[in-house]
Amino acid sequence: MLSESMANALNKQIKVEAESSQIYLAMASWAEVQGLEGIAEFMYAQSDEERQHMLKFFKYINERGGHSVVSELTKPATKFGSVKEMFETLFKHEVYVSQTINELVHIALQEKDYATHNFLQWYVAEQIEEEAQARTILDKINLIGDAKSGLYMFDNDIKRLTVVSSVSPA
Ligand code: OFO
Image (cartoon, rainbow, N blue to C red; front, side):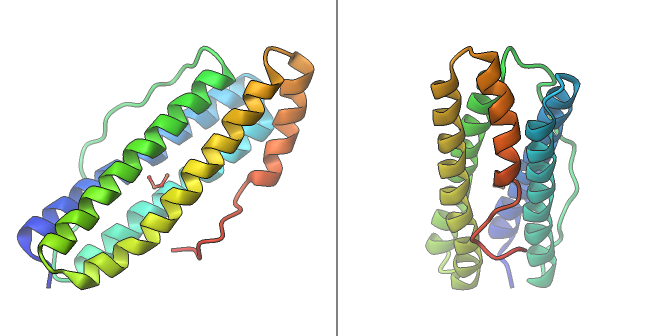
C-alpha cells in the first residue's frame, strides 16, 4: 500500500510524463510542417513512448491502493528557431525528467518503500538511455552545422533511431 505522500509524489510524475508526451507531440508537428519527415516520425514515436511512461505510473499507483489522477497540462512550445534549438529543448527536458525521477527514488528510500524503489529502477535506466540518445543527436547536429544537405541526410538518418530501446517496454 502506498503512503499518501508517495502516491502524491507519483501522481505529480504522471503530469510530468503526460507533459513530456505533449511537448514531443508539438515538436513532431513543428518538424512535420517544416518538411522534416524523419524528425517528425522520431518525435511522434517519442511522444507515444512518453504516454507509455505515464500509463506505467498510472497503473502502478492504482495497483498499490492509490488513485491516479488526470490533471491539467501546461501548453508546450509549438515553434522552434531551428532543429538544433528543438533538440536542445528536448535534451534539457530529459535532464529535468531525470531529476524528478531521482527525487522520487529519494522519497521511496526515505519512506522505506522498497517496492516503489524497485519500480522506479526501470525509469532510472530509461533516463540514462534517453539522455544519451539526446546527446548523440545534438553531437550530430553540431557536426552538420548550417549545411542544408547535412540536415537532409540527418532527417533520413534519424529514422533508424526511431523506437530503439534496450529497456523492455512498459
Ligand atoms: Fe523521456 O522519459 Fe519519460 O519523461
